[in-house]
Amino acid sequence: MTNSKFANEVLKGLSLKNKKLPSWLIFDSRGSEIFNEITKLENYHPARCELEIFNIHKSALSKVFSSAPTQLIELGSGDGEKTMVLIRELIQDGVEIQYTPIDISEGAIEQLVNTLNQNFKTPSLNVTGLVADYFEGLASITNNSDKRKMVLFLGVTLNNMDIPDGKSFLKKLHQSLQNDDYLLIGFDLMKSPKLLYQSYNDPLFEKFNLHLLDRVNECLGANFNKSFFVQQCHYNPKTQAVESFLYSTRKQTIHIKALNKDFEFAEWEGLQTEQSFKYSIQSIEKLACESGFKIAENFYDSQRYFVDSLWQVIK
Image 1 (spheres, rainbow, N blue to C red):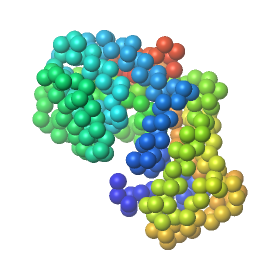
Image 2 (image 1 turned 135 degrees about the horizontal axis):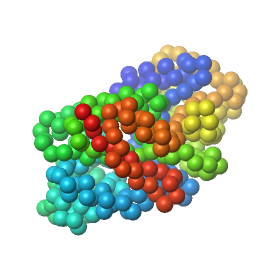
Image 3 (image 1 turned 90 degrees about the vertical axis):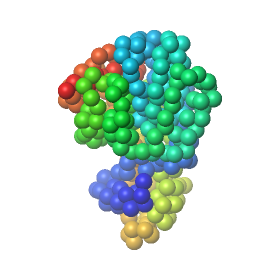
Image 4 (image 1 turned 45 degrees about the vertical axis):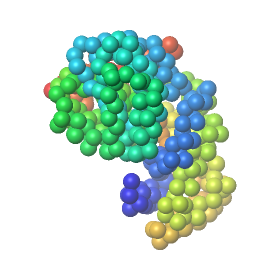
């Protein structure tokens, strides 16, 4: 990500009447480390539930690969913990695997490839990591492979996108794939707002959101003081999203050197830093249809808090 793109996002977001910055600005190496700590929290259910889904349904997922030669592709693979559950099952079932994780972080790809090569010393697994934009990576694979593809888009990445942006992303993904290719995509399901409140108000979430201010200070020469902000998450029934805010504890002026601009914060004014939309099965079905996919199967955790939905490309 270029500094100009970062600067444009900050200028746009802080100029709004209701200030708002996208959460992806938080994700440098330190931001990613904090988020990884969040996924291990007992009350943060998405990561735990999705790992349970892979452990419960690994055999059913393996059968998809057995039905035709299939290339496994993952967008934003992270540490690959969930994917390794599937890879282990595929190896046990005697399936030849071509696995291609795609990520913009060279360090993340290098670490994952090394981990896989250490954990699975078998000729039936071939790993090729791609450091690229999702769609650049997919285009290079599509042009060089005649295998059916299974694309993994796990976690809550789509849930964090604005609804119009999520729809645009899925339509573009559909265009990048061939007829009968598969997409396995994660959705956090709507549940009790009390549970959502517990999940998103751990002190680690405050640390994660406040890191955004560090990022703006570091990249753009701003003078945010983290001690003058507090974080809080709320479920908004109108948007059906958990929304996270940093609240200014005092009236203050923030100067951003790279923008040569001041931004005023009133006492207790909020800056929205995150959103996580919660889905119903009906809204997932509608989204799949509108994006050019059909749902082949839904895989749930035992509490039905989360679903990994298997979509087939229709062209």
